[in-house]
Amino acid sequence: MKNIIITGTSRGIGFELAQLFAKNSYNVLALSRNTEPLSKLNIKNISTISVDLLSEKDLKKVTDFVSNNWNQVDILINNAGKLINKPFDQLSSKDFMDVYQVNVFAIAELTKQLLPYLKEGSHVVNISSIGGVQGSLKFPGLAAYSSSKGALITLTELLAEEYKEKQIYFNVLALGAVQTEMLEEAFPGYKAPVLANEMAEYIYNFALTGNKFYNGKILQVSSTTP
Image 1 (cartoon, rainbow, N blue to C red):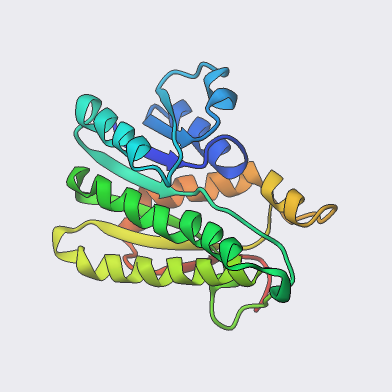
Image 2: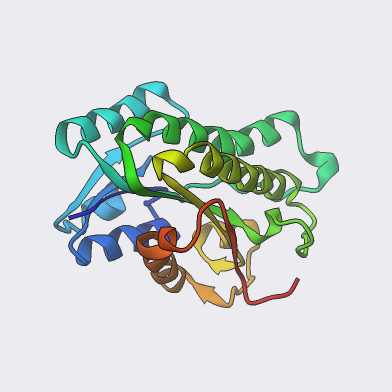
């Protein structure tokens, strides 16, 4: 039975992903600041830990759990993200730092902490955005968000190269618009073409099989061009 860690599981894609893996008999460790939405479902195979991904103390709770219960992580899905929608001239340095801390630095630190438990064949899937892909359509107000997602793409490519001899696989999915609470908060009234549970199904399948075909790759999961 494979062991799966997913971040950002209190709502949206992460919430759906955790249920999908668990219902298909995988062990799931669901990480989010708010664990109540998943905990109250009481689904077998889901363990929840309340985690602030920027806290070293909280990250230790994650590695302690893995060390005491699993000893190996087969799939890590870095799904948690932060989006600020503001005109560029209104974005503060703190806004940029807040976004980069969640979308880049926290992912790097969690991945680093879990490296001892990532074995041959383990698959790390980073969730980026189509807005972080060079040449894609860009939207005003997302200077911090989209540039951080571009940084995550490059980080993924670098990690794939650095750990390829250990056969730890790193890939990144650059998602188009998905109907989630985060999208609604940033763009009230906008209706995305894909629902959270539909995207979760895609990510679920990719996480399980994508490392057989890809390493260090950016897959653009978007119905729009560019």
